[in-house]
Amino acid sequence: MSCSHAFCTIIPPFVLDKMARSNRPEVAENARATREVSDAVRIERGARSVPRGASGEGADAERKVYDSENTRRQRVTQARFESDPESGDDDVNIAFEHAGTVREYLTGSLARNSIDGAGMDLVLNVHYGKEYNNAFWDGDEMTFGDGDGEIFTSFARSLDVTAHEIFHGVTQYLNGLVYRSQPGALNEHFSDVFGSVISQVASGQTAHDADWLIGNEIMGPDLPGEALRSMKAPGTAYDNDIMGADPQPAHMDDYYDGNADNQGVHINSGIPNRAFYLVATDIGTDKAAQIWFAAFQGLDSRADFEDAAAALAGAAGALTREGRAPLGSTQSVRSAFRAVGISS
Image 1: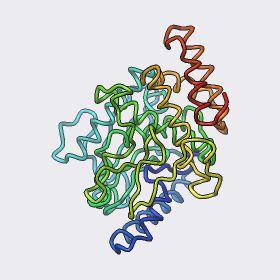
Image 2: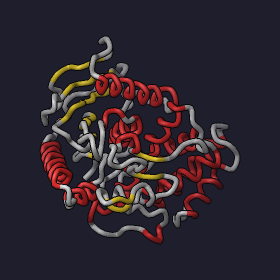
Image 3: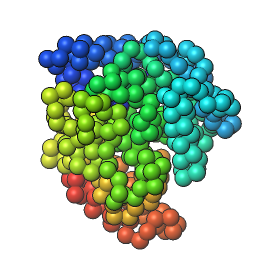
């Protein structure tokens, strides 16, 4: 099962499962409701064999933001399209601007015409559900809940969440990494990489300035200072009574081999995430991102961590020969993956 036939969420299922066992009734009830809605969307998306036609083949991608009006439906009310004036709704405007930031990075830095490479429109839905604690890519478009205001805030207001979800779409069209086990962890990893990269670019940060946190912008007042993932130090993003403890490993010695989370797609992504951090702090985030994008274009849909490491070392060598990566990039990639227990 790949993200083209399922859907990919920013909040891992095991976090919602932990929240559903909370001794705070409102937290538990909301987590269960979020899981139920997400499961229903997954089933509906799996039954939809024909895409909804978000693509504008050969044209320039346009941004289309809809307001779900707190229903469980997408594309309810047109809120702001490409040529529309600014909306009176902050979530609409922020989602619109974030989509533009990601689109600009795709075209300007990666020479890719939107998600599918052929001008696919960027369709975003805000105010989805009632206090829906998640955001997702469903194979066609991005959808953002408002959060409950206590544990999570509006998902539409986070650039790294928006970029993360859009890059699930890029993966869908780029290599279709199967959303299970190591291919699925690479799928999540690729979205985390470019969520962080685009946030760094937008903030004018370097690899050494960045916090390397994913999802810290959506944490509500009950969880100050927490995040969903840390690429710098997997396993340290959160540790609290509501979400539990961050289970991400930073090394293959601690690899999760259970069946939960589609065999660890969110959990084990911490291992290649740490490798990207090491390369970025060595040669620069922008150069590392170019290597990652070049390598992932050639990955098979069932690629594992060793396949990715080999492809990345090869891409680093090719870009070095072209003068697009600094000397030593290949060695940096190999060193980073060896540091997390993966041979290239």
